[in-house]
Amino acid sequence: MPASSTPGAPGGPSDRVTLLGMSSPNVVKILIMLEEIGRPYRFEHVDLFAEGQFDDAFRALNPNSKVPVLLLEDGTPIFESGAILLYLAERHGALLPASGAERYAVLQWLVLQVSTVGPLLGQLNHFTTYAPEGQDYALGRYRREAHRIYAMLDERLAASPHLAGADYSIADVATLPWTDYIARQGLDPADYPAIARWRDALEARPAVSRARAFVSDIQATDRAMFKRSSEAARRRFAGFGTDEPAKA
Ligand SMILES: N[C@@H](CCC(=O)N[C@@H](CS)C(=O)NCC(=O)O)C(=O)O
Image 1 (cartoon, rainbow, N blue to C red):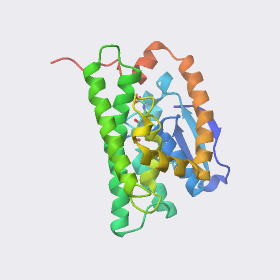
Image 2: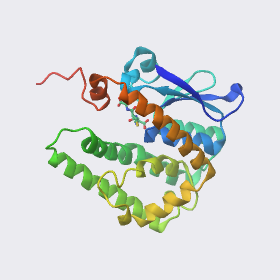
Image 3: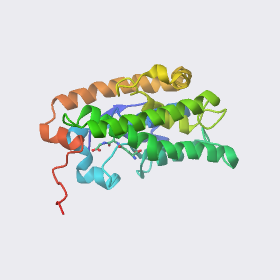
Image 4: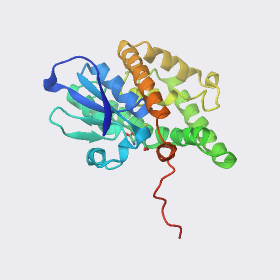
């Protein structure tokens, strides 16, 4: 279960939601959205480096053992960042057109982020950060895929101010934190100038700045949690399970 609790945006307890997470991109997108809509929230830090995502209480909220989870004011949990963004957008009538072609434009870019952009870039993060030496095949494959994805986003953003068209939407909110890694992944941000222009415009939004400032506090806690974590818990976080499937 969450290891610590930090107040997020101030607000009355009546409509206050609780976000369970850490400083990872799928959580950052929800923090940005909460700031954009001004929804009061609390933040509960899940200690992923102490296997907090695998304990029974957390798995009752999300059987997939991943953050983010949003707890509504009545205690109902919503997991999967795309579902959480849709809930908040519809509940607040924000960053998602109610109907028509514009709505499906947003949904297609949102689904592309949760189905492809995040998972593929996440695999590259795994192979650049956690995998043992000698993974040239996997590294090459995911670096090529990452470049393909960034080039596709860049092409889109060269033709359109935002991913879904003229207006800022939950598709931009979902994708922004996944473009934080370009340089760290060994790719050159200068190759994607339209992404850079779009990022600058989004980062200038007061809600995004507030979310980023809060994320740097969360990162400090993550670093402390990582420092005191066991080797076994770090390996499990990195996807090296203790319960390996039997070989055929
Ligand atoms: N599809 C999920 C992915 C969530 C996800 O991968 N969360 C990561 C942090 S960004 C996590 O909880 N990792 C812990 C683990 O895999 O044990 C979503 O979009 O919410």
